[in-house]
Image 1 (cartoon, rainbow, N blue to C red):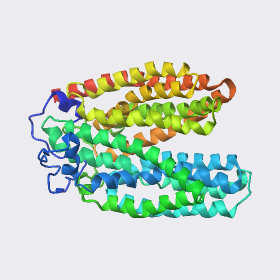
Image 2: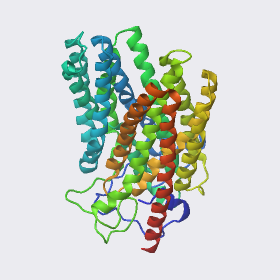
Image 3: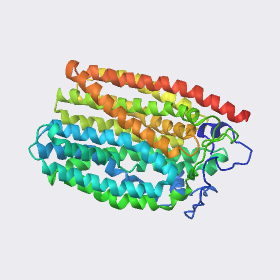
Image 4: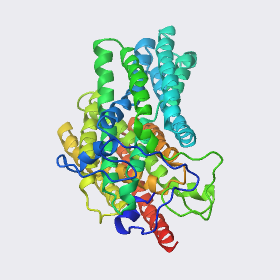
Length: 467
């Protein structure tokens, strides 16, 4: 599998063989195309019409709504635990346990998917997650009125297990798109992958806006347990449907006991060097996603303090959604960016824009001014996320693509927790402007990592061409 960056500048004339350490993917054909042959260009719908032609019409809505439970889980747990126990401390601890569990469990589920294929891992994790989410609901109602975090260990443990077992639909969908677009990238065209990753980032943004909104509406109008019950129902129905969708057969599976050999052809999944050396470049995009999460978490914390000054802290969610809207729109636009604009340049330019626009966060004194700043700030965020996921696929070692994709998602979760903690402490002691310093620092770190990634990717391209 060729890297997106290499595909934009050089088409390798040599025949492509399956990566060492992986089994050849079974042919998947939704009717319009397959990973082995390019789907015909649709007459209507532009570049995004290529996606259902590659994966089938049902895959896009299925992948979109199957990831919704993850977007509902943290806030749903926070709302339920706080409402039933009457303790913000218990609610916060339970929500934090979900985040920690998800950050720890995602790479494990990705590794298992690489080893045993996506279908069994998703099916088993869906069942375990439903049991864990129902346990959160039951545990919350078993300890009503408990205000001490230590006494609420049952609900906190259940919340951790719910996060740990949460099916990683978004990262695994990206793995499928990388397999489905492999044929066009071998021919030197990365457009399909750019379109697919743009869609995936937009889908993430939409679900993480829709999910919390559903939690708020259902919990306030019906009952605090209903959002988690709905999340469990969606997991039980949609995740298995995603698991057995025929696109899962397009993903190469690492053969049992396989290793990456030095004699293997270097490409997106097979590269020279030891297993440790192969994983080393992955640290760059993973660290970038930690910085992205820190950017998100600190912004949320700072906006809570900012909103409390002219309205209520709850208005921070509405302000934060503004950035999500512009980020989603910009992520969609990546599909139409010129092929001559390589992924490493996108990362550096996008992160530089994030850092520059972050300085504007210190200026607004009212809600409308902040809305305008957040609309502008969201514009480089979506493209940077699309780019980092693309580079993660480029540097993933043989048979480790699902592991890398889930590690990237885990990095966002861990970074969000870090940013929320740092931003919250600074906002508490010195106001929202101090918390925005964390946002600015995270964007600057993203820029620095992008510059390093550009050097790493360029050297890998030279090594590929030389071999």
